Amino acid sequence: MHKRRFIIEPGGTLNGTLRVPGDKSISHRAVMLGSIAEGRTEVSGFLEGDDAMATLAAMRALGVSIEGPQAGRLSIDGVGRYGLRPAPLALDLGNSGTSMRLFSGLLAGQWFGSRLVGDASLMRRPMRRVTDPLGRMGATIHTGPDGTAPLSIEPSTALRGIDYVMPVASAQVKSALLIAGLYAEGRTRVTEPAVSRDHTERMLRAFGADVVVDGPHVSVSGDAPMRGGSVVVPGDISSAAFFLVGASIASGGSVTLTNVGLNPTRTGVIDILRRMGARIHVEAEETDAGEPVGTVSVEPAALRGIDIPPELVPLAIDEFPAVFIAAACATGETRLRGAEELRVKESDRIAVMADGLAALGIQAEPQPDGIRIVGGPIRGGRVAAHGDHRIAMAFAMAGLAADGPITIDGCAEVDTSFPGFVELAHGAGLAICSEEQAG
Ligand code: S3P
Picture 1 (cartoon, rainbow, N blue to C red):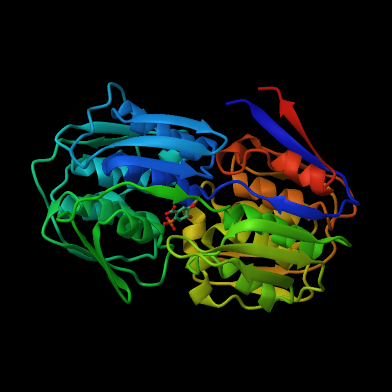
Picture 2 (picture 1 turned 120 degrees about the vertical axis):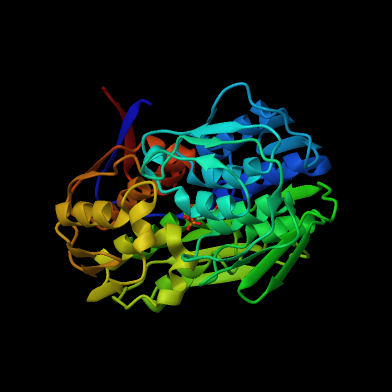
């Protein structure tokens, strides 16, 4: 992949009414579940970012006919649960952990074998968290010696439902097992140690699958037929989060974000920022079914450091890079614990954020399961995003509070979740430019 860096000059603000691209998690699920449902699924608001496009390309390679995307619209001709065909080559899922983990569940139950690969970052990420429980369901999946991809999934004769207590709160693991459960004999029941995003459960139910949610337990059986339908993908709150932080730490201006997904399993970032003193106003819209949506407005505020409540960690898991920038701009200390999962995201987000914050003059002490950040003045400087999209966008927002230019290396992966980020942020007043880098 080509390399890209961002340069942010100081002195910008954020202003205006903005619409962020579609939700990444829901876009993946719309393609996967639409493909194995019966009939046609029409998707609007689909995220045309590299990760969701990797899922789409993989589904096409598995024999599904999908029109689009065109301006966020897809039309999927569902093949039914047993209509997928073997892919001629390995499925390359790029940078996308969600694709690899959810496809593991889906392909574990097929009559044919599959091979899953990805980019250097994805090939380092832990996969036993899905392959172990899938093995208990009767699947045979070979990983590399460290439990990483490439994954070789053998043809399945029969999966059986299991009762699985997940050791970590992970929507990807939960979803992989629920999707595998559609192919299993009996019920598959998953118990979460803490609430994680529930988009899979909602979409399965909307398509008519037999899903039962009972507190921390979710179960599924493959008995009910699944019919596709219409999926309206809301804007991604994880993308909106950069603007929530940016507008909070800027010296002036205000931002209104429209069409933001407000699923309560995703809004932890709003709770955390409000506890820090952010001025965020949420107006939820009426939604009859599916995913809640609304408008979120934010203006600058004097932020203060907090102890982040551990129960909010899974509800804001992707937003911590942005939250750490808010913490750097807050008065006093912010402490995060119970977030060791951040070490196995697209990068080690605790180490990479701590290094970047230190390069900008902020005291940041990494810990095995979190970080301690002492707010203070942000200096200009050079930081490395290590090819992690959310790290790149978080540090871009730090430019709103810095007293000198910030250069961020390793930003090309921003397109995995937020194509058009630079243009949207620049149009709103962030003094950002993006440069191709040699090599
Ligand atoms: C996701 C779940 C989260 C999140 C990821 C998307 C999903 O991962 O970090 O970006 O779509 O299910 P975990 O389930 O591993 O926490």
